[in-house]
Figure 1 (cartoon, rainbow, N blue to C red):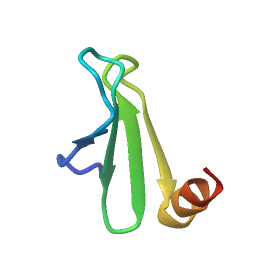
Figure 2: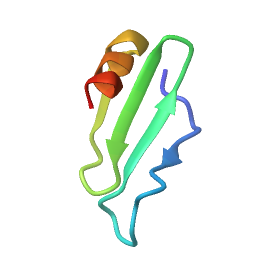
Figure 3: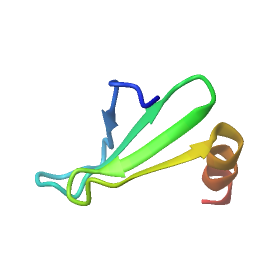
Figure 4: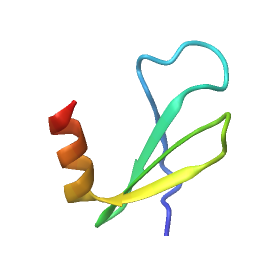
Length: 53
């Protein structure tokens, strides 16, 4: 279940192209206003992505 607590990127300008993130106990959800698409990954996968960036 996706939580209702979405956080917008602090680097976001005005408009609908902002990245948003939400987390629950074992998954991370990311999406954008413009696409209305949500990608859900495990916490381990998200951590690996952040480390690679």
